[in-house]
Image (tube, rainbow over all chains, first blue to last red; front, side, top):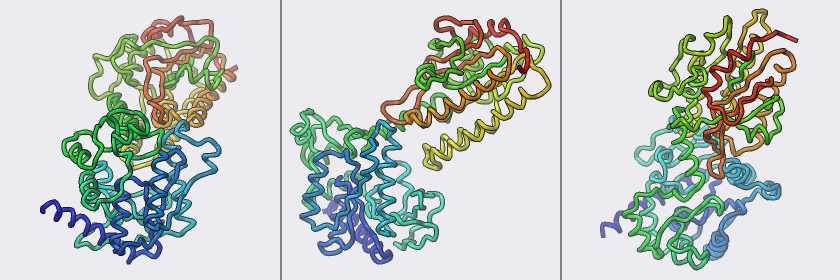
Length: 277
Length: 241
């Protein structure tokens, strides 16, 4: 019963944030990667507006995601009657952009630039993004309503406080505002919620499915990204219950399978050891 | 004599970008595998001093400074050392670069902002170097240190266009000096650099680089400490052509 109350509170706050965003901004949209967090966020958006999400859903297609991501996206978009925008930098892909050009360059070109373009073209003033404070140290500093400048930069030392559920939404210098409905959730909360709501989830998180699809034994994805930059973790968890049990005792970070994060972390450690920092 | 201390200059990259001026008449790799870690200040102080300085420099790395008497400069009547680590390093400028480097990992600034600081410092050092060479005062030896390749490489080694740009910049600096001055030129790097994984970042390797404008050859894999006794024998500078 306690667990139910706990999830109810998380859900209630998220729905409040989503409704605030829709009330305060003229033209919001929500990002959806098809991963568990953004799918939870879509589910919450559906709940907030009685089954129909009243704004567009943006999927950034880098052209190198797992086929299972595209399948899940198309299936759910149809089932949930989403106003889906698939944003893709076709020109860059045709010119051979990929992680071999440098992962940051690749991410900037195939993700950030694409999002900038779709925001400009469609005039979105708020983008709902499913980040959580427990994902990374820098994300712990985020607010529910967080302004971004034209280069998507964020000044974490210059943010308004958010007290008594009053969210500042007028930022003169901002190109748009990021809204973070599940900021206060943890990875474990998301899975418990998926279970409670009996939500659809991308099977790439299941070890059994990964073995069937790729032939890899004792592996599953814990975080979904582009194929070249995402590696599975060692795991036998195949059902939601098994995933939840695994997460209760794990000491490995959620994004440990992301090559870009690994390299960044490694580079930082090396620079420290060499006396640069 | 002119000595270029070029941080992280890597033999395979010099060859890849066909930097003829950096190659000079003779070139090769150095072996720094005797060092536990390829730390910049430790390696340059060992180059200046002719001894492995790893045990001596344990703390306060960047502020460590050798007196002239403990460097090969003592063998010369006149010398100029521009921004040489462990000797005449410009502390404020390098502290600023390190601040922006750390800032990148803390997401307080971008790679481009870091690069801008590095390039500005590089241009300042380059100006001071050419001003020194153009000065009427003659020095027996001038040593200049450039960290452009190392600094840019740490965050952008996987981006070929950026690395080509910094290698071509240093190649043109050496080319200009070789064209204008009738001097023995020695180029030495403290360590090389390689890509971390498949991404953008670069890491130090245990092989530095050397090249010489004269017939002097340092053979197969000299140690960074071997240059100490050879430099006084290479001789001074005959001045502008």
